[in-house]
Image (cartoon, rainbow, N blue to C red; front, side, top):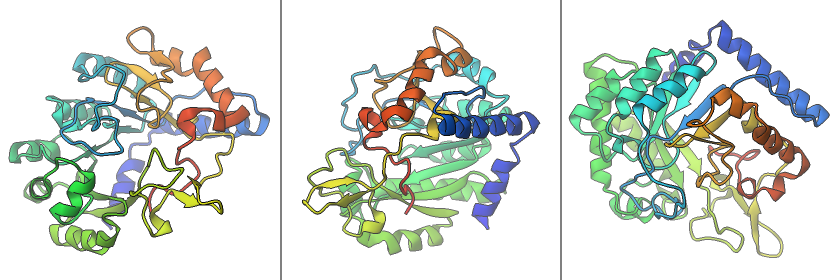
Length: 339
C-alpha cells in the first residue's frame, strides 16, 4: 500500500505541460529509433543532480569512496541550483539529489530539496544514513522530500562493512529510525523510506534478514539492487552466487559478461541526464567522472546543451555502435537493476 501511495504522489506531479513534454519525449525516442535519425524536441522528464562529491565511506566499487576522480571535488552552489532548476521545473517531473558522494554532507541539502518541492517536482535522494541526527531527520521530513533511499547492505556489522567500508551499521539504523519516528510524530506520509540492499556475495545470505528488519523498523519498502562491478570479465568476489541477483553471467570459456545485449539505442538519452555539482551535463549516471560531459551550465542554458550538436552527436553514436562507448559497456540498460 505504501508503494502505491508513493506512485500516486509521483503521478500527482504530472500537470498538462509535463504530460505534453512526456508524450513528446516518448514519441521522439521511438521515431528516432525506428528511422535512425536523431530528433528530440522535448526536455528531460527526470534527472539527477550531484549535491557533493564528498563521502565518508570507502566502498570498493565507488570512485567517490575510492577517491579516484580526475574531476574537481566540491559542493553544489545553491544560487546556481536555483537558476538551473527555474529553467527545468516547468517540464521536469522527477529530481534525484544524488550522483556521487553522500548528499547529506552538503550543508544545505534540505534547502535544495525544499526548493524543488516548492516547484511541484517529485524529489528523491539516496544516503548512507550516517548524518541523520535527530534535527536532520526532522527537517528531512519537513522538507517535503518524497523518497529517501537508505543503503543498508548488511544486517550485521561484519557483513555490512565488507562493502560499506568505514561504515557503522548501528549509526545507520539509528538514523533510519529517527526519520521513521519523525514521520509518525509529524503525521507525514513522506518521505517514502526505502531500505536498499545492494546484493553482493558477502551479503546475499542476509536478504531474508533485511526484509525482516525493514518490517520491524517500519520502513515502507525493501529494494534488492544488483551491483555494478568494474573488473568483472574474469570474475569478481562481489558477484553473487545466485544469478538472480547478478548483472553478469559466466560464459562457456569461463569469462564473464554483462547480461544485457547492448542494443544500439538508449532510453536514458531521451528521458534524463545528470548534472554534476559544478554544472557539467553528462549523459547518464554511468559517466561517473564526467568524461563525456556534453555541456556546461555555467556557460550556456540547459536547453541549448540538451538540443545542441554535442548531445545530438552522442545520441547518434548510440544508434551506430553502443559497444564502442566506454560508459555503455557496463551499463544496466536492458537488464534487471532491481532483483
